[in-house]
Length: 242
Image (cartoon, rainbow, N blue to C red; front, top):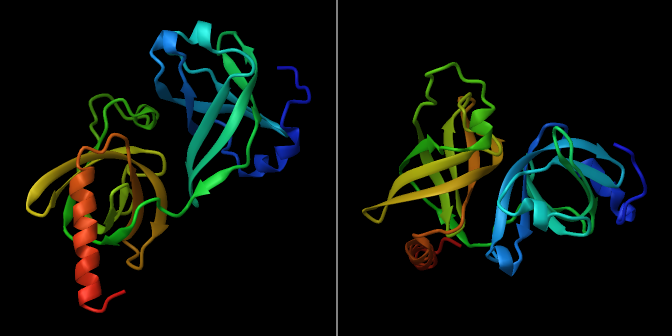
């Protein structure tokens, strides 16, 4: 692919923070009203990266041949050791070939979402973790025919309206970027929520790792989670735990 100076090249220092070749990323774009007007989020991968230009494989979706064109704004999101990163881009070029690609020029700085948007409180209890059907990273796990990734058992560390930290055994399929279904009890009632692993940290126990899962929208139990957080905060204040 021919390289050329792209709009936003002054932001090229962000390239040092970009994911590497073949790294799984997600692109978000706003569909026009004629195609439903939805904000869609599509998995893809990094094909190339140069100063001032990030190239991703073109994801296919309904209306892509009519919607995708140079100048279209898109957001790229990816999981990394520091948290979930996001950056705004403009499509500089659409290359249609055997593996079509989008040549993206940055239009903002990289934002690392290390701090959560929601108040979090300590939580305890066991949680069952299962893979999500259709997860692109599951298809890339190179599983032998008939092999099913096992259900995992973990323990809640903290909880918020937007996500959870939990501890799990090391060496499992639960790694950065994976989609996971969490099932656990909250105030005596079951809660089932899909999310994405956005951080993975070593635990004090060498046999465990601590992962942070950001809940995927929508969050049907948002009201229950918010109520749990508020009630826990009230108990903390009454007990002098701030």
